[in-house]
Image (cartoon, rainbow, N blue to C red; front, side):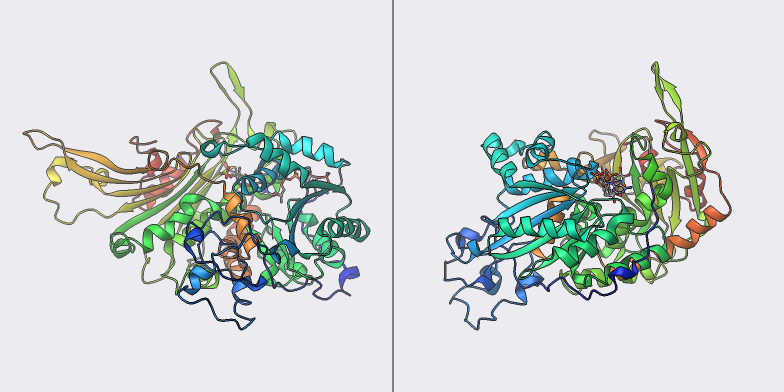
Length: 586
Ligand SMILES: NC(=O)C1=CN([C@@H]2O[C@H](COP(=O)(O)OP(=O)(O)OC[C@H]3O[C@@H](n4cnc5c(N)ncnc54)[C@H](OP(=O)(O)O)[C@@H]3O)[C@@H](O)[C@H]2O)C=CC1
Ligand SMILES: O=C1O[C@H](COP(=O)(O)O)[C@@H](O)[C@H](O)[C@H]1O
């Protein structure tokens, strides 16, 4: 697979910003995130008051710019924020706007696995506007019916609201269409445009393109879509999948190329970890609980661990993976994004720009990553229980002599007043013993601890630890010390445990649902701004180059193991023990 980013072609230079700027948002039939809808007093709405409520419950940028432009005062007794969540389902003007979602690369793995199911889930929850269509686009020749057959097997209904499931699927599939075309053909995108126009039937049209194709095709698609299939009278937005470049230069080049056709606010660079429930909850935990924020600094936190592991290998994605490796695949984006959210200062507001400003500041305050603070590994074949687990290089799409890391651990530091000297340890690996993603916060030892003798010599074991288990089985738990009930004085380690499945009966939405909804709503908070991306690449690019230039060989670890021992030495260098391997909850 050609994985480099092709420079923008000269044929495209004639174009200016052809995507029209955004000025409207379709209205959903029911706001899936607002419970207040029914409590708000009705009033006559103009189109400017239609609004989808995004995942942070904030008014949406795209619409709020328009709100009040008709000069009409808000209805008496209705607060502006209530105004924004009110929907008049019978409003004739809503019926005039449409949303078209084009999934480019519709025949691919991600589209089938995540995008179509997420779109259906949004439809099932009544989160999509009244008038919407989904168009699959790819080179593979398919009819509408074949696309429907292909995706129907991947759709599921919420187990907690399993009503009218079959009927809803039928209705959804009827809104799905397919157009086969080349990714670099303006003519084929013009055909797509005609089909979209036919479905949009002269209504105000908003268009969302989801680029679910390999990265070397991004620019071609954006060029063709921008020139031939952008909306003439509504907004046009583009969700761009990762990887967004493979180093600072290629990322900057990609951004430069995309910006020939798009403005920054039309580009939605997705990092699906930002759409995960527990990652969303990180800010809520920090900023809406008095007990955590005062502890959130070097004064009380000894180290922070960001851990990602999968219990399967690259299976089927070896061709892609070998060009990127685990540092680019997981650390530079998913784990670093979590780190930024974890460590940022309090933003001025929940507005996307305020949050992203704070994230950029943290990323730019990070100490350059040193080779001696990184260890890399690669899984090798392993026999267990009469079964053979293949090594990374056994994958036919991976060169036999590949030294691409499938595991990495790193110690990172933030050079600012809050975090000076606190190790942020990252660990990411494929083909390990378990699948999990978590954030672990290990607090300092209690000074002059009166109960010191009850812990023996290992004080680390007695420190408080806060764990946010992102997946599986979402949970937030705090390890505390308590007395074992009885007449003696024996101490015990216990968990104050918020286990989501025990606390909430509602199924947790998939990250792609939240992110698609936000992109439709124009909410950028959970998408990566170009300066964030630059800062993230600046941190990792010198290290990645050094690894490549010096041809550092990864430490081999058996498929299904706990990873290379080097990760323990790295942690020990900073007096840290990996919390996931402590034996208590590993
Ligand atoms: N799959 C996953 O779990 C994840 C994927 N991503 C990213 O999402 C995007 C899509 O991923 P995924 O669906 O796995 O990708 P695929 O490799 O399945 O590609 C998607 C579609 O693109 C077309 N395509 C593939 N290779 C080429 C090529 N060399 N030239 C032209 N067209 C090609 C194919 O469609 P056709 O031949 O019909 O045109 C294919 O069905 C990628 O950027 C990936 O990095 C991100 C996170 C996770
Ligand atoms: O982005 C990616 O993420 C997946 C893991 O996502 P998850 O939501 O299943 O945890 C990973 O397998 C893949 O390699 C990577 O590209």
